[in-house]
Length: 121
Length: 114
Image (tube, rainbow over all chains, first blue to last red; front, side):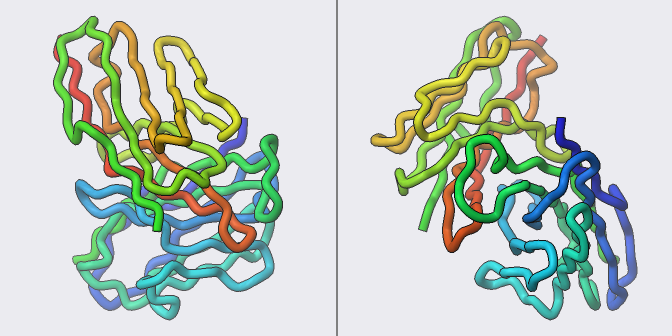
């Protein structure tokens, strides 16, 4: 089946530093990848949608200059939390799908990564 | 704006009991609905995906139903086991601007007592 990996699985950093999280589709080409954030005891919230080779689309309230997303290839998207602060501490999950356009019942399932727990001291 | 609510927020049952988790959504123009489980500190495990043209899906002891017109989905777990203890999330999937939009529910935290 389709597998999505994330690296690292957890990271602790000092306030003010930048952290990069990788999301990879291991056995399929992901035309679209999504980044979610989950604060403790809350549900997942979509942060942004990225398509390979184009700029990410951010959800309302998400700072694009703080959360830099790069989708340089069909198997890799990265999320960089710039100048991280304690309030950025969260669980970040990515997902990938092969379809970003017209609905297709055979290719549009989202496959989720295992998540990355970020703790900013 | 799509809102997805799950009731109850938490549930504790003895082992062996059958149980139902509820998910309701405000906008019935959905494409798919998916149920996940999330173990503490872990990512999501997909349980069942129901396409909008379907009414239910089954996998082992799990059965999920979908009623788009009333904006409801239920996840039925038969003969619950302690290993079923987790948070269960439903997610509503629609298309907006050519891209998938996924809205997650608030979750139901299930504890199955041995």
